[in-house]
Length: 99
View 1 (cartoon, rainbow, N blue to C red):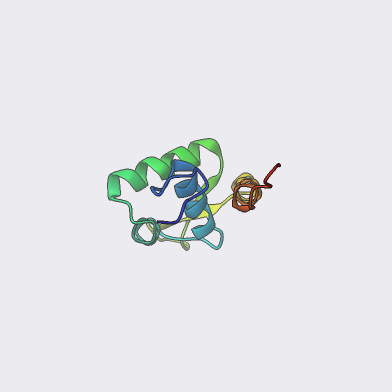
View 2: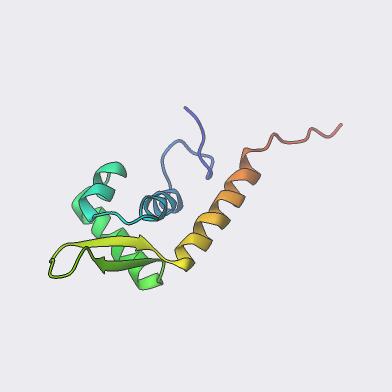
């Protein structure tokens, strides 16, 4: 099994957050994010609420006079994605063997 950033085969909450934020860069509906992230409705609600509270996501009305909303990654969320990728790159490099 391939290792993830945290070194274990299961997804960590930071990986899930990065995936949600990446999916929402162009805007995405809750159900779309839920299915793509392989989360149940309770889990996705908790993650979305957390990300909204942190200011990493914005909830935007899909169009005028619509009850539907989409989630869009904020500037802060984009910074998180960038930092996460930098960290992941550090962990993906081969260790230097000292003699």
